[in-house]
Image (cartoon, rainbow, N blue to C red; front, side, top):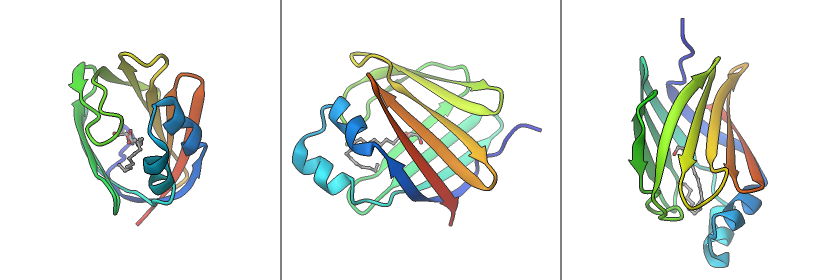
Length: 134
Ligand code: VLP
């Protein structure tokens, strides 16, 4: 049985989001707002098809993909840089590589107990987020 990330998840911790945003070139005013947010993720998983909605009082971001199928990602409302993204399984972890202008860009999702974990990477910065079921 594959892991099922489906559900509604609320952010409970957000380590080094600031460093990650600086690496992405997010301006000071936007970072000030963004770091106060407690985003919610709604994940719909159907086999190897995913829909991840990240919502907040400031901005929302929606992502749809299939495992192993590279797609163009626009990062609209985030840093707005286009990249080629590819999500694969590494054991029970969902690993995304975002190839483009920024080196070492990507993220990893996994479940630990009943928590959802997310590591966001850009250049030499790593942000670690933990979510609990709503
Ligand atoms: C931009 C960087 C904050 C900060 C300004 C806007 C959307 C994995 C993946 C699926 C993400 C979330 C990336 C957050 C980058 C913020 C607006 C915050 C709410 O999630 O779940 O896309 O990459």
